Amino acid sequence: MKIARISWSGRELWAEFADGVAYETGGPNGSQARGAELGPIDQAKLLAPMEPHNKIVALMGNWSGRNGREGSGLWIKPNNCVIPTGANIRWPKALKEEHAPSFEAELAVIIGKTAKDVSVEDAKNYIFGFTITNDVTAFGVLKEDTVAAQTFRFKIYDDFMPMGPWIETDFDPKGREIRGIVNGETKQKANFDNMAFDIYETLSWASSVMTLNVGDVISMGTPPGFVEMARGDVVRCEIDGIGAIENRLV
Image (cartoon, rainbow, N blue to C red; front, top):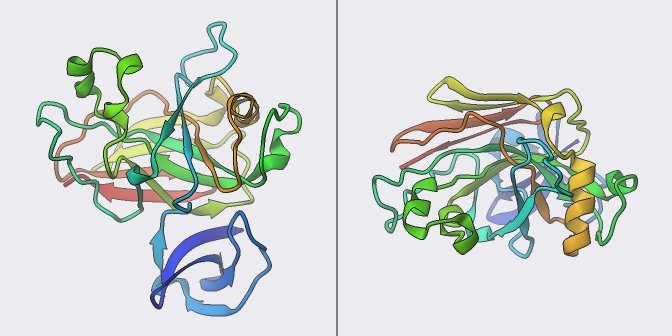
């Protein structure tokens, strides 16, 4: 089932997309019963599928082997970064031209019920669905800020987290592929079976550190192949079984 956050006739609401039609429904924190028919989905303006009060838990090093770790590096990406598919990624005024941002195609997990100290075995019961993120990153900033441990400026500029196009509730990442494409050229291509820590291990690990609230997002890290972008580049992040998001750097 596809659950989208949309703008419709001046209202922001959650909708189910089915057979080309949008129906009013609840989001992760509401009833998923199909409500009133709104109309054709092509008349809906897609918003990012999260609400402003929710947080994004992002990962580092989830495609580079376990290396004796309990889990991937965790940090919080603020919601000022979030934009929907189709929106422009605006080059920050404070970002130097030589510090061009990179794209990072990622799978994201949407939390379906409050999670704290959840076991790996029980983690699947806390998942509402899945979406796609692009964890835009200005690695060049680290040349000035020295190391990631001293700053997350390189990760948290406005527009640095395109997300969407919707939440897919009937998705299993096992054996699925993710692709990152720049101007039609595939730069990233990987299978989720190659993640160092899978979605259940990661949800359990994150919930041992912090409470995960309904609607929160865990972005699962990016595979190798990401590259710097230039102004005007169009980046497309695709996941089989969910869809794609596409954004231009301006």
